[in-house]
Length: 496
Image 1 (cartoon, helix red, strand yellow):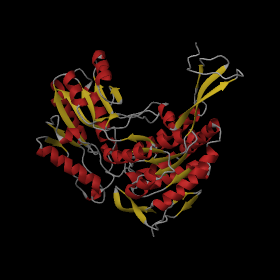
Image 2 (spheres, rainbow, N blue to C red):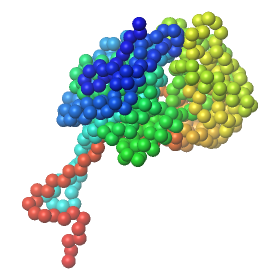
Image 3 (cartoon, helix red, strand yellow):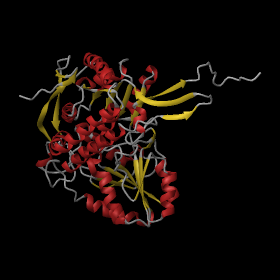
Image 4 (spheres, rainbow, N blue to C red):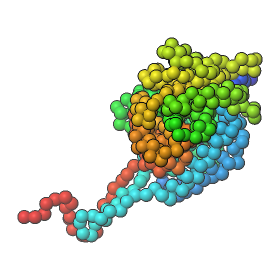
């Protein structure tokens, strides 16, 4: 009998009002049923909002340094339970344990960083234009934050949102991806053990079209933070705009690595393999395009294909595995579709392009690391996000052409350049139209203490991580104190 997991609402683990559940299965072994999770609806969201409003009333009056101490304890507990959580995450998401340990480590780093920000929620003091008057601003909490997170980083991405929101004094309602609900429950257990007041955090499991939609549309939710597809983000953006809600969107990417003819090819090779096929290509920052100067194009492509063919596929829990499965059947079908589209458009399948052979792969959503060459700017595989282990290679003649190709897509999350030329590196840093640029490193590898996000259809201007996210989850309040003992009129002409 499969275990039935619950939502966390109003300070307790509660079954869904719908009395309906969905399955959570291991993508590397589809017969492995992890459990049944609530298929929640609007009534569950309503109860969560009522509870979160009560939690906000308590938590918002807790001093920010004290809130930070709770998050420090969260970091300590994540250190203590790192291996257990990582293995559970691999079982439900698929990526190798080395990567899920990194996922937990990012949560640890984010917790400790949030702790320090509890003493750094800076306001400003400025001189008043009038005598005997004080002028200042400070940061204060907003209310209830609705957080909707994706499957590919089951713990790291939620902590980017939850920890700053909580540090700023907000209550949080979290709708995790239905592909990774178990990790969400494990994180909530850690938060509660660390001393977070129970009504400050709510978890409502379910599908986006039901639980997610209800969360976005509820008038008692003041802030929405969403990571997911650009299409869904546009729908959420329209709703939040109509309801005047603060909104942070972190959406798609079509990230490119540029390799110039003077690059260290061995270093570039390691970078493109990790950037393109790590997490089975299921990162918003994955290296999806490789833009190579023609003089080194053929050599680098051959090196990549040779290494890609030797990458070991398998369940992420096996120590020898380098590439795990895709998250589900729909994800694999999408990858298969785009590989077909690329060939129809004239690209050449250099390696991969198929499910791996063998009985060991029959019950998982595996797909071989794939390289498409002869890709031209404007092809769909060069323009559209695939979210799988597919690398599209574009040959260019110059740095100027490489920059044009990089910028000529709808997204603008991450980019990278491999070169020994400092002038070329600084040109790229200036001219690549992305929120993040790496020099001599792949398009992945963000650090918890720097802002994360992109431009164009990747987001709506806000950033996660670093110091900027704390501005998103707090309001600026301006205060004037007049101790002159008389009416003073600011910005009024007193002459005459």
